[in-house]
Length: 171
Ligand SMILES: Cc1cc2nc3c(=O)[nH]c(=O)nc-3n(C[C@H](O)[C@H](O)[C@H](O)COP(=O)(O)O)c2cc1C
Image (cartoon, rainbow, N blue to C red; front, top):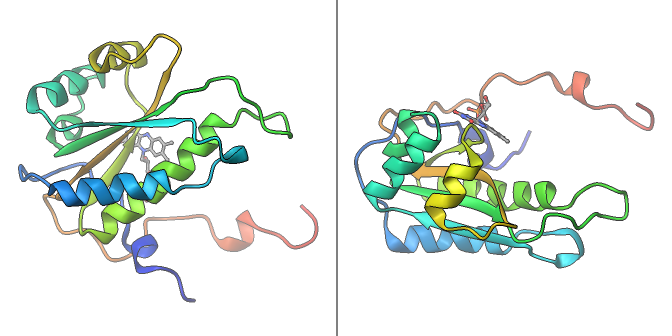
């Protein structure tokens, strides 16, 4: 089966080397997020890049001390600028839109030879204060980006078999 190498080699990285990432790499990762699809093409997102050590350490504290949060060379806070727009099917659009953007940024980071971890275990209010995000905005995910400390395995992590998660014509 032909699947993109970035999809095959992506793993969550939870240990980063103390090595900075290049400005151009950050720009390309953000560009991948900017180009993501969104409901009605509303693009109600804001990607806040945190690279200063002191701020990363404060975010680590807000993420209940998880070490990999402070270790990552960049923390991209994936935020929404609208919290109530619903798609025609009734679902809120922002979690879906932001997931697309985070996924594209993740794959671009892997393409750059970097490691990532998507983090949702954090106190949103604290992170919002650190980032001085407006009251009505939400910080939905933290995307950690950096150089993996250990070599990343070439095989994807364990997944349910395709037969269990897909079917044809009917549920
Ligand atoms: C929406 C979302 C939230 C996640 N939150 C966390 C988190 O808070 N902390 C963490 O270490 N990993 C987090 N992860 C990473 C998952 O645990 C990981 O993707 C999953 O175990 C599959 O492993 P893999 O990414 O190595 O393939 C999150 C992933 C997603 C997509």
